[in-house]
Length: 296
Image (cartoon, rainbow, N blue to C red; front, side, top):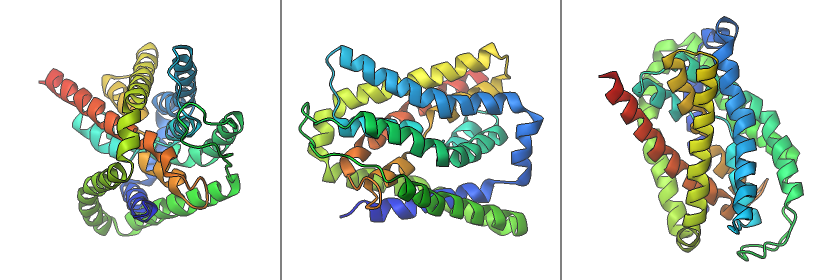
């Protein structure tokens, strides 16, 4: 089974559902409370890719060699926008849901441009034979134009449609959102299951190094986000939201880009996103549980 036929509708549904939750006042938050929005975007757009790259370089100094395809996959998920599930996690953690929605929407727009630029540099700097794991010796190319067009079609269009529906048919938008939010998680579980079945041996063989890399990445970035929020004296609700928003990436988009026949057309590149999604949910569910206990 070609995974792209599963991930495409999932990503489209997630982005349409995000649009259904957006209101014009969500974008006014940028002017009303610029500090937490700027901190969140710095964490997602700048810190995540930077820390991911530093971790990759640090691991190599300890002779933990990641294949070129995995390096590209790690950087791909680090450059992706925030995941729409972060809004639900922020609500469960008693965070600032309005801030979470604003950050998810803004990062989805900004990464349309930052993701191709950063990934073009990553691919260019990793044009090496994959000697360590022998997963691939081929030269990997990134068609930036195709990537930009695909992101517009699969992200901007469904988000915009959902946004328009919410403006003119808010009650219908709420009903559709209530249905879609129940579908999203089972659909992602299905995707992960299919991926694991198809690439079981590679995932098992590489889980130690990739699991370590992704866990360190999530803890480091969420920790930096929490530190920034504390230094800038943001409210407790804003801090909790930034921890979740910076730690929760749109793994579905990373998988789509990796598997797309128009871009990388390589499912091995998507494996880091699959493992990231697993570790991300485990770590942030634990975080939500801790914050819930503290609130009692």
